[in-house]
Length: 264
Figure 1 (cartoon, one colour):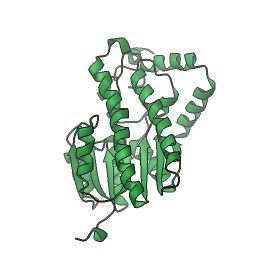
Figure 2 (cartoon, one colour):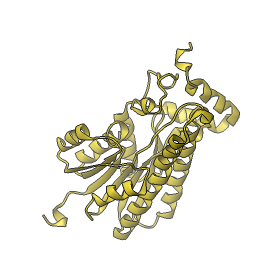
Figure 3 (cartoon, rainbow, N blue to C red):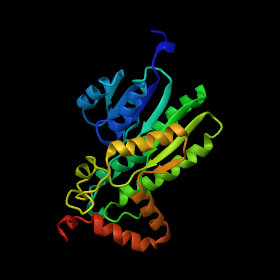
Figure 4 (tube, one colour):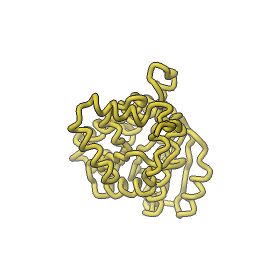
């Protein structure tokens, strides 16, 4: 098959479940072949995406490492990357002083180091072709001092800011960068972050990851700079911007401190 006969290629990280899988489904439905990456098996995700007509290449790798990112990019086989969904991310609940620092470092390397390395490598290739769309999954957590989730919120503050800075740097290249900022979403995030005993972890009105993904996908296709998913999250961010940071941190504590799920 000639390169010109191939469907456009999208790369999606954190694609085993949640928002990442839903973004991959949207890309498949819109005619993309896929390279999907995650740090866990993706057998079910791969089957679901193939059922939508996509050619799917799964890469199980630690995307906190440069080697993991290199393996992901190598799986593209030199094909132009039409869309990149930089969605991989980890959380880590609990008091910072009680956290294992290897776990702390892995969150930082997954959410920041691996993400921006992937962005740099993929965006360089996109700029050479003069086209491409990038969607980075940030978070409204980036606007909040995250007591008992301090490392995660700090990494998302970086990602939210970095995405918009990169967008400006690439404004004349044909490559767009959009940042999706969801709030509390019904994914495996809270289980993996050891936050199921928190009020936020047990929150029963979490957003549907499919709806969040659709909001982000549409924003990317329109070339929008950033989008906060859901009116409640928009309102929460607006409040965070005018509320003293100490009060925001205290409010976050009431949601994220271990054991708060047991409190009325």
